[in-house]
Figure 1 (cartoon, rainbow, N blue to C red):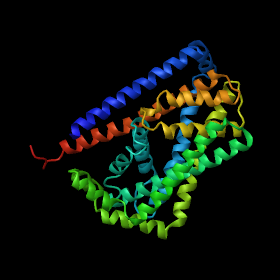
Figure 2 (tube, rainbow, N blue to C red):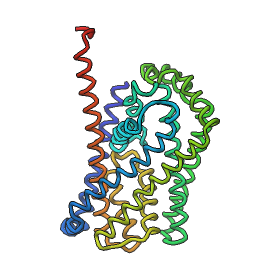
Figure 3 (spheres, rainbow, N blue to C red):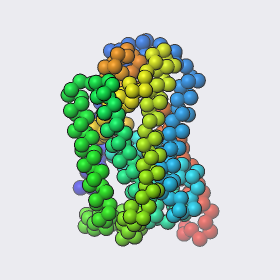
Figure 4 (tube, rainbow, N blue to C red):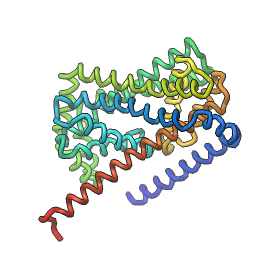
Length: 339
């Protein structure tokens, strides 16, 4: 039964991914491949590489939001966390899981450097900080858009529904984390025959206690984490402003904020599509066009952003492959390993 469900999920993922790719190709054909290539060629390799590297700065802010939660609870360095964060984020960007699939990877890569329960509790608190900061970012961006760059009414109603849903989810997450998340989850997993996953968490009672104690005793650290995450979300805004200026279509801060905000709305609604392929590019093309930019500019930016994501996914995959090879080397050198 479980194998059948996994097989069905993979087929669904493949079909959705293929559909997204077909949508992207169709949009490129409609806008004009030559038109898009001219915009990308106008940008050049140097600026494109700069945008890819610039994203590393905002990855650093995201990682700092995690580091501030752990700095008094472990000896792991910022470099250790950045490596783990980059690898986990690569999984989050690749697998349709509402950005949750990479979190166990972060815990795994800290094995031996951070106690398992501490790693799990820190990732849990960080994820809440991440979601809450995104909700605040989208709320402020939505309000700025209403005042400066009004979008169609139906878009604003949809945006309001998404923000309301995310705000409700934040309240629910805070409540359930303080009440105890992993204890009840472990019971359900064991009842479903998935007890082996419970062992990877460690002591669920200790994790739940660490999470609730952190919220009670460390409000300043959580506020700092929230600030770093909130700051990091503006990476996309800055990226849009730099891209449009480099391609000869300068964009104001409020316009870039509006485009990035509504792109985040699309990303959250289309979380089930692998990498939001096609949907992410299409949404940005529409939002650019709605603010008076040529469609080719919006689609070209969507493609550059996809290239940037693929570059960082490659870094994360390389980290995982290196870690796997390193673990295999250590295991093969173990004289006590059973034959």
